[in-house]
Amino acid sequence: MTSFEEIKSQWTHQKVVEIPDQGHKIIIEKVNAIKNKQKYTNIILLITILVLVVFFVYIAAYNYRTVALALLLMMGSLGVRIGLELQSIKKLKQLNVNISATNFKQTIIKYYKNRVRVHMIYTPIILLLYSLGFIIMLPYFKESLSNGFYNYIVISSVVILIVLSLFIYKQIIKELNALKELKDND
Amino acid sequence: MKHLEILFKEVYRSNYPKVFRLCLGYARGDEMLASDLCQEVFIKVWENLASFRKDAAIATWIYRITVNTCLIYFRNKKRNPTSNNTNTIQDNSDENLHQTKEKNIDSLYACIDKLSKDNKSIILLELEGIPQKEIAAIMGINHEAIRVRIHRIKNELTKCVKNDII
Image (tube, rainbow over all chains, first blue to last red; front, side, top):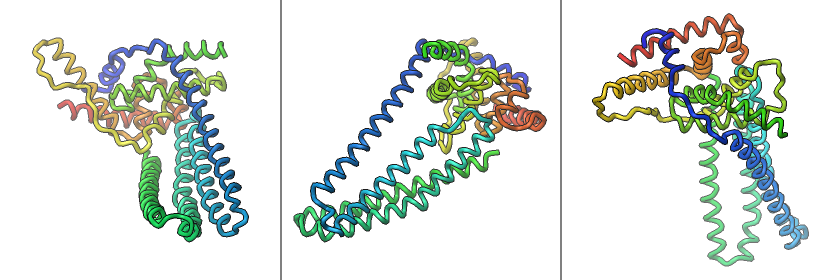
């Protein structure tokens, strides 16, 4: 291949690809499956929230102001984080692909900037609030749980916190790189 | 709904090979990856087909979706260089010819992969024989700028392929 015309000829004479026989049907089924999966995810989340509310009422947490505050901090921060993540996934899926590549790139850059903002500002605040709620609950855990189980909860929560922080750090780096790549790409 | 499904079947069958070839270019010749990518593209086509306004040719509309889907699909993805070549010794001349062709196309994929994302999209559309005016509309860049850019990328690509083969 020495000239562009030869390259083009090579390109157009590639082996002919076979069209999947029921490919169009598989696509439609896949879209329906994705929609169903979203429906189930929403149902599971709703049930989780209901279970937490029932638990809150069951232990009559509202009678103990500190416990109520701690539980609300933990449940609230978790709820907000899940909400942010779901919103972000929804936004990514709803990106309009029917626009010019230049405009689309700008939309993705905006999306990633928003993701980085969530990771760098909201997530640490959420993590802090969750940890605060957990720390407030510790004396109550100590009071009502066996020594071994209490120690287990404390140690495992520290491990979870470290793993979660590392995961968030990796996610930030990954999305910052994606943003950089999109901006550099010209 | 039935009418839309019939239309989608038609669109799918008439555009699949073109979209697949374009995806192969983005996926550096990796057929499995191209197939996944192709599926993503047609999922978007199906989801947007009802809102497709006939102010552009359907093929141009699909190319636009393909370019944008590939941009988002390959965001920050590290890919291993793939090659369809196997290093088996073959003494049959037909097979040697086939091997040479495979090698040529592989080095073309490798050279396309070296281009920036925008340039990759532009040259893949050019290789597919899309008129430059349509490429300009798909990319959102004015016609004159596209013309100059295509000329530059063509030279870059030809030089790379030449060096790769020699």
